[in-house]
Amino acid sequence: MKVTDLLPFCSKRERIADIASPWSAGEFTFATNGVVLIRVPRLAEVLERTRVPETTKAWPREEATEWHPVPDCEVPEDLLCPECKGSKRRTTHCFKCNNEGKMEVSSVIMLGPAGFQARYLKPLSALPNCQVGTFDERGPVWIRFDGGDGVISTCHLNR
Image 1 (cartoon, rainbow, N blue to C red):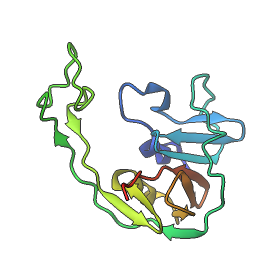
Image 2 (cartoon, rainbow, N blue to C red; image 1 turned 30 degrees about the vertical axis):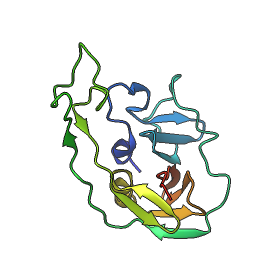
Image 3 (cartoon, rainbow, N blue to C red; image 1 turned 90 degrees about the horizontal axis):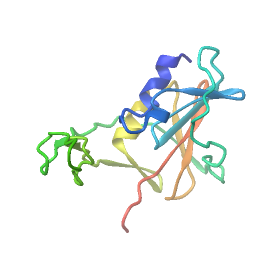
Image 4 (cartoon, rainbow, N blue to C red; image 1 turned 30 degrees about the horizontal axis):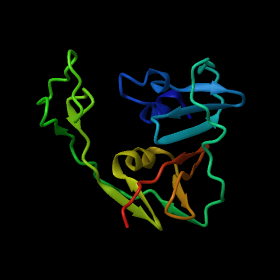
């Protein structure tokens, strides 16, 4: 595993700089975008940092009862914000898009009893032999792949 393999799992949002790149802690190197957390054996070129998310409580409390391969899925294009028309306002706050200029379109993929956003599931398909382990409809749930593991948060479905 290389640092470049972890970058798709780092946050791309300007306002979340603490998770914009991988970090190391103890014997592991981590990457997260706030929905997916990836853990691999420590990479020597990735340094420890002081401001990083707490990871010890992120892991599921139960073992997976079902393992699913990551399906092929399409990620819908983001929509231009109808409120600020993509201006990414800096003088006033756009409550529709949080000054991002675009709004994400949801696309839920079901794996067993759990639903996942396609935009977070799709990058997992680049990890070797990646599988998602579910045990109920609530998350987070396990991810395993050759060379590491992780967790992904499920969608909260209205049933």
